[in-house]
Amino acid sequence: MNQPRLKEFYQKSVMIKLKEHFNFKNVHQIPRVDKVVVNIGLGEAKEDIKILDIAIVELAAIAGQKPIICRAKKSISNFKLRQGMPIGVKVTLRNAIMYEFLDKLINIAIPRIRDFRGIESNSFDGHGNFNLGLSEQYIFPEVDIEKSDKVRGMNITIVTTTEKDEYARALLSFLGMPFKKRDNIN
Image (tube, rainbow, N blue to C red; front, top):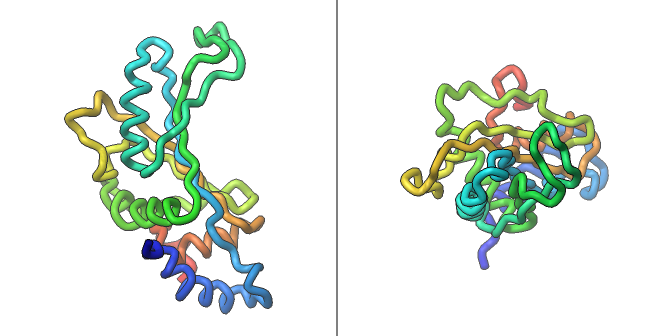
């Protein structure tokens, strides 16, 4: 199987840029993407279980991997939630599938967002991980609008091997993540 295009770009170009930019002495100091977690919260699934099936099909088409069902850990009476009820779906991507998804996210999906001006770079968590919230799943070309029942948002977490947000921001910027112009490293 061929190596994903984004992984090849990372190994041939981004690693060199990061090593020069931050003066890393060792190759293992250079940050890399460890995993990507895509999560869809489905609070309305407690009334209609068919929503869960539609979300699973859509997320599997987007990510290229079958998602797992997340269930409630505790009962909360104010939200009419019982322990064990399905409240979301998530998928954890690693290796080749992760790079294919990131390539699709950066180059196809994000530019399709309406009125897009760039991603805010203040969504780092202090440990080198980046969280991106999307308001609709229709920006991915795999989602069939006719079969979808409603617009659903999703949360995408990009986990890196570094502990510093500065290194993770540079890594994502060099990979092509369209941060707002004042936040770009280049």
